[in-house]
Amino acid sequence: MGRATTDPRSPQRFRRDLAAETARSLAVAPHHQQEASHMTTTIRLGGRAARNLHKVLAAISATQALPPDVRANAAYWARAVRRRMATRDVRAAAWFLHAVGDARALPAAQRRSASYWGARLEASV
Image (cartoon, rainbow, N blue to C red; front, top):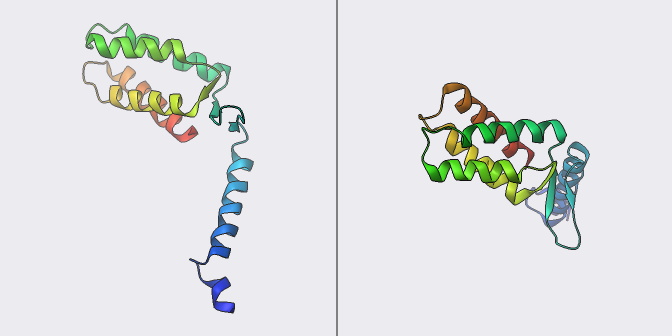
């Protein structure tokens, strides 16, 4: 009987650990909100972060050394940046920024900015 409660794979411990992890994540990141109507999670970037991210993406979209489809995607994400964004959009923008961060056609400073924002967005998800 006592073994079932101390076993790390027991359902009771799993539920307790899950509840504790959920409480920790809500305490650490209160900006994650779940909308009951659409069941989508939004992430709050904030005004300054949204402006800076927009500037980075706009600069990438203006880089003529990149292929047109990459520039078009950068322009799309620059227009899509908001103070609050859906998690799926933040994740997609992070993947895009990671991919662009590896592009040798970009100047080193823009590559670093793209990598930084990709990592920052991924961490917020």
